[in-house]
Image (cartoon, rainbow, N blue to C red):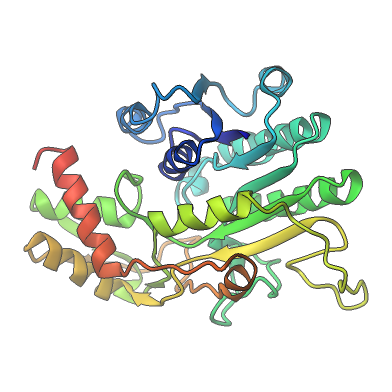
Length: 335
């Protein structure tokens, strides 16, 4: 089928394009190729599938209203996977309006395109950051998420609310996937694993926030893509048991769903760094610092709903995932 993938030059978006093409789909990829991080990495990602006969690449910003209208009218995708977003919690502290343009205005244009052109299913990237001030572990899609700690998190929660409105008013099936700390080959240079690897190999000191007491549900890219691909194939359904007097925050009387997608394993930051040191054969020089504004101490996904509905089974351990990343990093950067 014809599938539109936004953020097609991004870490997750480019990997998803390759998976969908391998399945025999026609893929329209869109990305604005901004310079939030090295655009050369984005070009290298899409070079892997740019010449595939089933792939079309469009360089455009989601905030371009007329451009998005034209794109939907011309290509008429049956399904849409929105992996585009201005990412990064820390960047949002100094550049809040960038998140409004991409994550809210751009998402509104996607919703409108889906509505006007009878898209069968919209799957979109949400984030574990929506859990914000929550402390109950593991994070469940049935928990309240009304206390985000960054504008990035707030923009992702806004996407879920906006999607519900379109699902309710227009019957548009929408599914949110709350990603938990995705890592792996071709990853983002602003993420900890990428930054740590670069610093260790160049003999620089790595900065470890919250004095190393962070814990994360690290999720390998292949496990993420497997989950996303399965969800795309099954449009969101209404919950016939949804009770407006006791509303479930993960489903609705509309065709709207929310799922966590994570590795389903809580890993301490120092354990993660130890796996990286072992893989590289080098002990890191470390500087321990307080927790940064907008960050959260721990993230841990309850993925029971995704397992039940899609038979999702993350399979890559942190040790294996880190080893695969470092092998790619040394190959890509010739080290």
